[in-house]
Image (cartoon, rainbow, N blue to C red):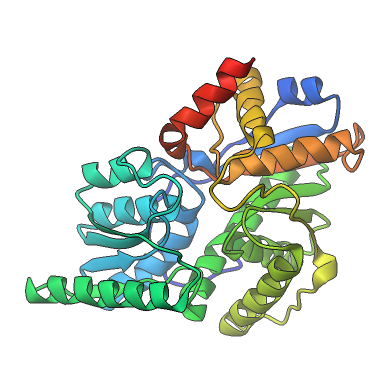
Length: 342
């Protein structure tokens, strides 16, 4: 019986594969490494957000909405998966996106074109109150445009709305349950689960699931945008809200996670040399691709932690491949430059 009994749509291809990375393990001379292939969820370009959308969109569809509106970065993996899910459900999708590092029509923005999403890109510093107000105004304007056309829009504030986040976290509680079942079935004794951490929604769901299942698997979060202290605070807050929402008696504290914030680089969305090297070594040893924003930085963290002896040859590590492959094309100049250096 599943840990989560909320209404759920069938949007993804589950369970996703748990693939052993024997070549990578050999090259690193470190732990036994497996990849949980969330990039193969089958919706859009694949990715970890599909689990969350199965619960969020079940509620949105039940409300009578026929349009979803979201707001994140221009190359947002979440927004592409949301748009693809909306199309699968015969819904419209619109987005107010902040410019970010690569607002050119490539990568995920190119996929939004194919999906015929309505997209408005805002310039400016998204950390300011003025920018937030402009974004809210643009979202309201877009919603009114859909209303004027006879549609019923629903605004999703992923990462910022407690109720929406609790539904998304529920998706990753089921993800933790699926992973633990796979580990048990394959008799894999893993100690660590590596996750790239941004909004903290996926990490929160994983930790809650592992706690509910009394698993000894330890979450290791590699931050892509926030300090260790901010990440821990957000995860504790989000897990408490989600646990209260679901009626679970479970508490999450700092000791339930290991968080590293030394692999961000200059800032969110800006590649590091180590990230690009990680993308290349995985492609050249295992034949699949990471992205330069999330999984590439998480893998650079894993590689460095192996070099530092945090993970040893006696350990078994699960790497959560959360998707995001289309962003590779938006970072073509950085990638080409990195390849030409070798």
